[in-house]
Image: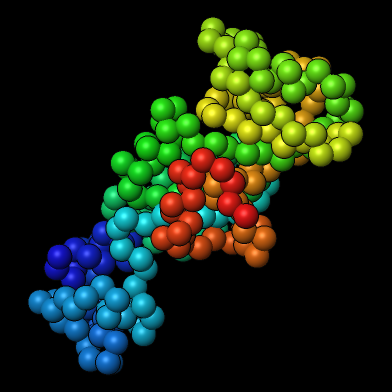
Length: 238
């Protein structure tokens, strides 16, 4: 791939803007040699103003989403793209959330520019688990686990019952909920159907991939190869 197209696809600017950057000497190799338009060394050897280039396609990152951020670049308020380098919103292919989190739901969010991987993770046939930590307004009554796991719970305005979900009680008003699907406001609506209200909701795992303890709210990083494999693991990693 030519240097101009590579930089434009990574969001560093339009092709004309990237061309001007190259002519101004902004691109070099890892030995400090200025690159011209016709040169394109290996991705890892290219430097933009002395810094390594952003990761190439396919990119998969995890973000610890804070409260108050939406997952759509078109929303007028704060979005998850505000927490990433600005050029990430300009990548081609586009970097998209792998299943959205509501504005007031926090925790593990994956974003990728790999459309096939995105659809593989969110497709119901993948049975990719999503695990949420819920803090509740009222004490659990003891019937919720059976209700969520019955496979017969139909939420208001939904014609099809939910797939069985697992509820693990952590405290009087605290629980983990494991889903095999991802419907609109699903966890909140499930607890509402059980006569309760969710005060705070955080996604803590996708498949076997846990939200790392050292990834602070608002921070992001690229997944390692081992972490990619955990997404489709049948059980949570240690």
